[in-house]
Length: 279
Length: 268
Image (cartoon, rainbow over all chains, first blue to last red; front, side, top):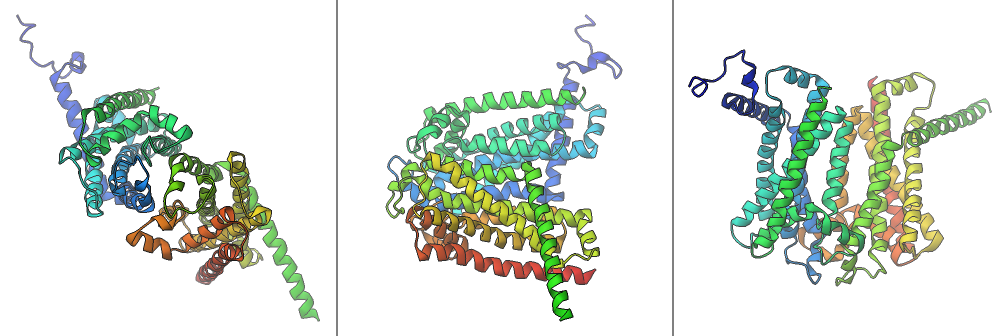
């Protein structure tokens, strides 16, 4: 019977590091929350590192809707409010850059030696990925909320009630998961600021090769072919669904699948990248 | 007579020094392609993107009459590339200050003005190359410059003068702060200036406060001068807007940069 009522393994027991161990799970979560809290506190301590990720989407929402105001008059454009089209783009872009910001912070920690100390600590490895992800989600909630408030002041309107706000947040959190995984994975592999340029460039280009600026029926040529198969188009569609009419499941599921798929691959990329630090 | 001879000798020396340092600035850009390639590739990427995304926008009422969006987009690409390229030259000047090379130049019998002018010459040369590259790359894709070769020359000159203006302002910042990070930090300001103009879409299709800002933004008028050369043809109005706006901005910017240089030298 003793094996059935076996208490938690003792301190020196190697079995204490099995994944099923509840104490181990608690340690992972505690370490992850600690790391997330540190990262969120850094917003106050080093606002210059976070402010661009907040201000750029606000500017982008206003600037794009002002610059391309006339585009809504084209036949096939799904809204007559340009801010309704560009606000979700700005939140998705801001959210992905919130995730990438975690990648930049990790590069700073790697270059400054803090990451070596983290790796020497008894914090479980998975918490080094989970903690930054929680922090990215916290940053994303700030970004999406502020962009939405400013966008609403600038004239954006939800067309099918508060559920549209939920899809906007889900798309934002999904993009920040993808950005975090991609950013961390590159940071772990390059270990210097070269990774920052690659992170930004790839995500920026990836996001623009979608229906970022105009809907699929309006665009022409090569971009239409690329945007149609780019999974990020589905995430943008999910973000916009509450601003362009009735919310239909047909406009949502593709985005959710893309978030699950790309988010999972990106986090795996980060976890594998973390392992390369031990090589 | 002796004084005149010395002045002439001095003038020759200043020209030689400026040429040598300009050559250094231009070679530095050629030797570090990673620093200049983004300002060549990104504007072209946005032209390709814009032409595919906004190709049907030329059907909009009030949109200037163009054969394709590509013709419309060229001017914006030139100004975008030149604005971002000019930061590279100013950053190099700030790096010279950070590494102490600037102080070594000041300790030598080099003309003070040539230190600044050489960097600006580098920015101008690069802007000329950028404008030529943009036109050459887009021509096979259907770009038509209605103003012909003379118009292309005016566009190259406009691009170079714009680089002088932006380079002057950014160099003033580099000289004042002595920090390449501060110069790089000005990037969003240029981005905002560009977006609050008609660089990417015509003013005629904007409305409200946004249109009013674009109306008074000199970048709008500069871009529209270049754009008229592309889509309307050669006219005094287009050439004047292209060269006079950028030229006037350049005069002010150089004055500001020289003032900053004098202040820095006086403070030593």
